[in-house]
Amino acid sequence: MSDTSAPSSIAPFDKAQILAQALPYIRKFHGKTMVIKYGGNAMTDPALQKAFAEDVVLLKLVGINPVVVHGGGPQIESALKRLGMQGQFIQGMRVTDAPTMEVVEWVLGGEVQQDIVGLINQAGGKAVGLTGRDGAMIRARKLKMLDNTDPNKEHDVGQVGDIVSVDPSVVKALQDDAFIPVISPIGFGEHNESYNINADVVAAKLATVLQAEKLMMLTNISGVLDKAGQLMTDLTAKRIDELFADGTISGGMLPKIAGALDAAKSGVNSVHIIDGRVPHVLLLEILTDQAFGTMIRSH
Ligand SMILES: Nc1ncnc2c1ncn2[C@@H]1O[C@H](COP(=O)(O)OP(=O)(O)O)[C@@H](O)[C@H]1O
Ligand SMILES: CC(=O)N[C@@H](CCC(=O)OP(=O)(O)O)C(=O)O
Figure (cartoon, rainbow, N blue to C red):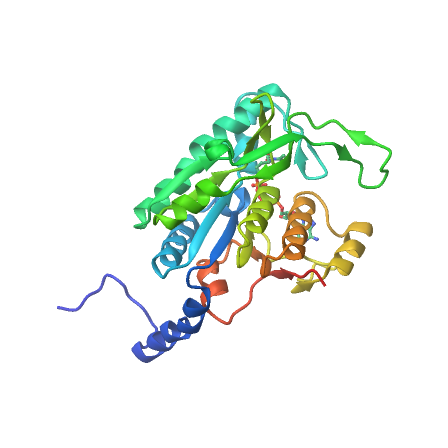
């Protein structure tokens, strides 16, 4: 009886070649840490979510250490709406008053994180959900946000956090023990108050502190686009300054690129903003010679 459970149009020899192509990458990245930012916009389709979870588990099983930092902007937005509240963003950061902070903690640390943990576990991995409070990981203070165009103007964005320090020991302990950390971008302050931190900023800082081999930010667009809508496959610090100045980069892309550049400047080997709408984009990016999205370089 033939096995019809995994129909495929790929010939056996081609399959073997694809698998063999992964070998040099598995050797190169064995034992290395990969920080994966899983954006809220990239996690809306169940089939893509399942493929993402499978990729993370496969990486772990071949000896690479994935650390997932998740977002959940759209999920917070719909929870606020259900409660009759209105979300507001300034320069890519959610204005976070006390009631909004409650919703953020409830959505990120609750349903969003547990969905990801569940999917990774279902795919055969052992995921552990954490917030920045766990293991005293992410200390934060209130973000002082200066206006992009007028540095004399300051915006009050409420309980948005600026990272003071990251203690990665809980992440290291978990990854040494076959677990896959899944982290919500919530920090704690001097008086035990909670802070809402942009997930791109957390992923970038964590990648730096862990001296990760790669930082990959999965989003809902093919990468960073120029004014004509064309993908820019490579960006240097100098070019990024120009794009900030001429307004090509806006909204959620602002903290993403700022964080990506910080990580690239601080010793993370390669930093990519990639299209989370491509099924198995993580495997393709890490274990094949195919490049996706935009690579951010310090120079
Ligand atoms: N130059 C640009 N290139 C690509 N996307 C951009 C650019 N400027 C602004 N954006 C916006 O940034 C969004 C990605 O950021 P965000 O919505 O925060 O995603 P995520 O939830 O994945 O972090 C894109 O969907 C796009 O609307
Ligand atoms: C301060 C701030 O803006 N925090 C974000 C945290 C979630 C996040 O970053 O989600 P995405 O990665 O899906 O955008 C927010 O409240 O939406």
